[in-house]
Length: 450
Ligand SMILES: O=C(O)C1=C[C@@H](OP(=O)(O)O)[C@@H](O)[C@H](O)C1
Ligand SMILES: C=C(OP(=O)(O)O)C(=O)O
Image (cartoon, rainbow, N blue to C red):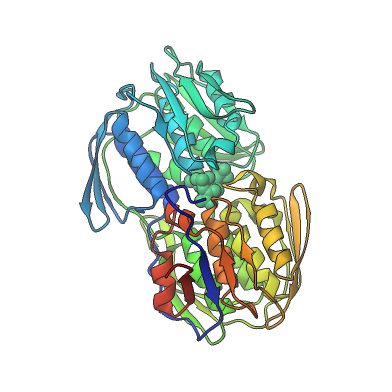
């Protein structure tokens, strides 16, 4: 079932090469944070290139419910009139974060140290995901949360009236948990310290500094120690959202798999906490190059050029790289099916608690399409068959998970028989222009009812 209306059955098939430029939308992680931090600043934050995917739109609506003004000027230009740290007003109704783990967890953090009671919900996927990882550290501030069994949404969160600052070692590699604690720390007096043993995407830290917070990061034996001084006045910013490397992954992998392809994906951020997939593909022998390497807004940026790569081989993906490519494992598993030999992915337990259990969702579809997949709680191995040897010819379940839907549609561009997904609707959560963009490159992707 699509979260918004009837299921959209989509099919992809082998055809001509993919050619041209793929202008992917703005980064989802940075878009959420632009709206939330904009709402917590005093004055008008201007945003260019905001991702207008459903996840981010839901966060925008939530910020309005807390009292900020969020204005869409068209063409990716948005502005947020913020209410300041501690300035949130209690929403009159339930906050529905749709399909978005990032949205709900960051917003919970942002309201956790405000004197208000808020009920959160989401779609069937989000309501199945664990929230205890966020509500446990928020309890240290004095926040109370009551949800369904297993710490699931719908959940009511009572913000701390007199919050105390917190020192917290994040037990799972999660930028969402780290960010929730930092956002809660904004409205607590004194220093909130968050320690992560494995580095995860660092957009919250970078953006908080940009908004004028007093935040320092130190690499120690204990891990990355992030110290935030509470109750700052955040200053509104002008933000240009970089294009999303997690979305770029789909046209890049499609070009590697579709015979004769040569695709340029311009202006992709290569922040080391996000770029792991591209190095992994290079290690597998992909013809993927970084052109026009430059720095923009303090971040490395490049144009990615991907060409058909029929001689890729499986590798053992370094587990230390997992956090920097966590959302890209589904599409990597598709590329692995066409490589020669085994691709071994370890240290990826987090994949089981995303929009779907991504190891299970991909393994079932890949197996049905003729590929051998072995799996354990925090690992999986895809045994690649080489180009021309992957059968396909199935309809895979997308399980309310945009990345699963897009991965199987990329797969169908190189399987012997077409691949379908039972619902492409969720793609709109992160990559609403996916279908049009891929078709423009020459990909044979159609809707069943078209
Ligand atoms: O902080 C973020 O913006 C995100 C963090 C990651 O989740 P976890 O923090 O659960 O690893 C990632 O999977 C998600 O797409 C976006
Ligand atoms: C895991 C993802 O998103 P979220 O956790 O925000 O739902 C994703 O986009 O792959």
